[in-house]
Length: 256
Ligand code: ADP
Image (cartoon, rainbow, N blue to C red):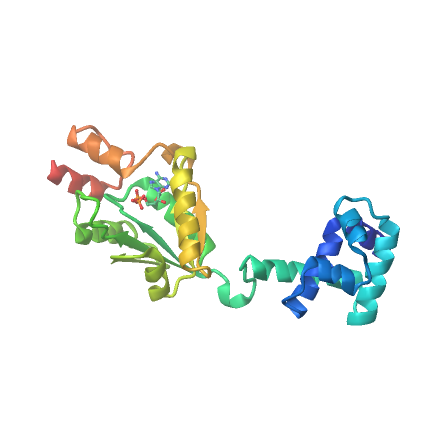
């Protein structure tokens, strides 16, 4: 079994990269070329390795003896170590301090629909605390004021002990930090949501690498539902009672 693991690890260039990554972390200025020199390889051998031409058995033996002699651990341990290094490079932190226990679910919620509530229910199942947070967002002209949107959410979520409702003005990641959340929940309904959500998630990651965006999918029956459709239908006095809670329906009727 042990021999098989080594065989698989060493059978491709990745095994060489494992070692390179490890050495790079030990000696940050080292290049792949220098690593090759360090383990006694010529440039030609390095090029052969990259093209998959270097005899595998020979590479295996070189790497094995180098790792064991210089670092005192086995090749399998090196693989685990390099996975850790790679994760660090990608700034994925697997330590407990980043375990997701508290998340925020930001949105306009103008007004809250059963689609939003579906996502919140799923988030509640997964995390200890969920802060549903209404974006003040001065660029959008919401039908309901921030206070009204918060109130409608609070009424909808009063049975959920793990949920808090608040509002924020500014950056989502800042608000997440402010409330002590390490995750941002967003709902994905269809492909059309994806591009915008993907962009936002990456931007938020750039702004705050320690905050993770999590996408949840609602039940199929809500995938075509959004607040704009509800507002439009309500303005035409259509029956939207299947998509929003009764108290939201009442509030909507008063607007039109
Ligand atoms: P925003 O202006 O931030 O998109 P919304 O209130 O429209 O605010 O939506 C907030 C979040 O809830 C978004 O991630 C959105 O994709 C998600 N969402 C909205 N409607 C639904 C729905 N019907 N099903 C699932 N997720 C939804």
